[in-house]
Structures are given as structure tokens and as C-alpha cells.
Image (cartoon, rainbow, N blue to C red; front, side, top):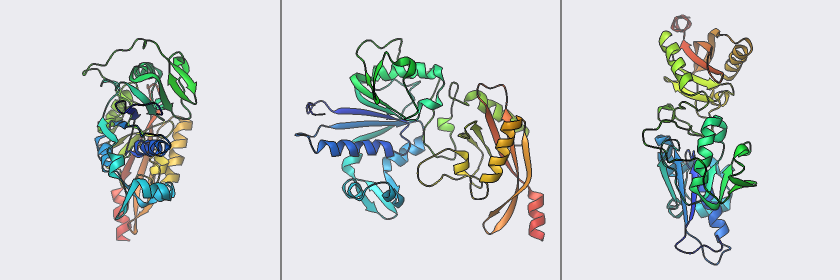
Length: 335
């Protein structure tokens, strides 16, 4: 940053940007550091995701009042405009970030990047996809550019491409065995840290953990059961797909975005879900709990909960369905 000319902007790529918090946070950090430089370099942040709904929220840059618990008062005053119900990132910062829908496995990557932030995305990809993505990162970065990964992620077999410095620096040299993807090539990566009622626009396909095979098997089972609402999860209880309207049973948690099933469970559902899933995992068979009673809107509803292990897949996945017991609900009303 210290020796960057006016015609050489600092270029940053944020993958899986969700609703924009990470991209705007990086813009704030660069702005703060630039205060100590003789001349503030231009900053260009390209933030990408697969989910158009989340991207639209990121562009609006409006966040609830609860961010004051995590953002210092000085940063709130400097980088946000307070509005009714929350805070909006100010125009100066918003103009530094461009949000776009981008699929690394089917769209050409950006180029001449100084920094790529790809935190907590690689853990959702199988080694086959990682082999394609790491050379793409090497291609996208300038020599000496930096790759920022999550705390539990590493470059492992790609050490020849990057130098570890807590974050990873691109080594000079040719990018090995990498081609720009063609428009008709299949393959996607998951939209990380997202919350949407449907994941159709960012569904995990072939290669992503719990991907296409799991969804096709889930389709078959749901059709056979007259399609009650439900979710498809992996062994870590991360939701891979929403199926039908699940808002009576699940809702996005407050605070940090998460697709953890138990964190999204509405009041009264965490314990029944945990018990049924644990039993299904332990016995590797379908678990059905009849007449699970949960309070809602001042009354009580009876729901049949079912957890079905999906077989013949690379990874253990489970289909969870919520079937309202209309007969018991009617009996309860009559009483």
C-alpha cells in the first residue's frame, strides 16, 4: 500500500460474501490503515456469492441496531449512517465494494488481485474441487498477492503455489494445470454464511459435500411421502437444502449467520431434533417421533418428526421432515 501509485488500485476479492459484512469490514480496515500513509491508495473490492437475494441485501448495506454490540462506537460514527431500525454503511465505503453473482467453477475468475479472502468455504468442498480452485486462486492473484483462509483451512498439497505467512502469499511462477472454465461447464461451490428460505440459486451440486446425489435421493423420498416440509442436512447438522415451507419450525438466528440446524430451530424444537438425529446417527435407521407437541401462537400443535439417513452417498446425510398431525390438532381444539 505504501508504494502504490494513483493508477494502481488495491484489488480485493471476497468469495461467499453473503450479506456483505466481511467485504465492508475489509474496506473499513484499509481505510483506517490508509490514515498513516502519505497518500490514500484507491481500493476496489469485488464481493461475490451465488445467492442473488443475499447479494441484494449486501448492496443495500443496512444492518440491525444489534451490530453496535460488535462494532466500536468510533467505527459506527465514521463508517455508518444511523437510520430508523439500524445502521447503513455510508456512501463512501459502499462505492468501494462491487457485489456480483459469480460461480468460480463455471465463471472465469478475476485477475490481478492483491488479496483473496476465502474464509470457511474450502471446508465445504471435496478434494476434487479444491484441486480446481487453488490453481484458480493462484491465477487470480498477482505475484506476492495474499490468500486469506479460515482458521481451520490450509493449502496442504498446494504449498508449492503459496508461502505461509499466517495468510498465504502467492509464489511466482506459472499456474499449473489451470484453464478458464467454459460457460457450459458444471460445478458450483456453496454460498457460505447465508440465510434464505430456498437455496435453489445456490444449491450444493455434484462435488460439494452432500451435493447432487443427496438432493436427488431426497427428492425421491419426499415424493413418496407426499412432500411434507423438511430440510436436508449433513453429518455436522449443517443445512444443505430447504424443502418446502419450513418457517413454522426453523428461523434464521440472531447475530452471526449460520446454517446450523439446531441454531435455526424455533423454540421447543431443539431437544426433539437433537434426540431424533442422535438416534438416527447411532442406529443408522429411520427415526420417527409421533405427536411432538410445540407451543405456537398461544396454542399447541402436534407434529410428527422424521429423520431418514440417506444411503449410498459419499457423505452421510439426513432428510428431516415435519408432518403436522391434523387429527390430533383437531382433537386438541375440541377439548
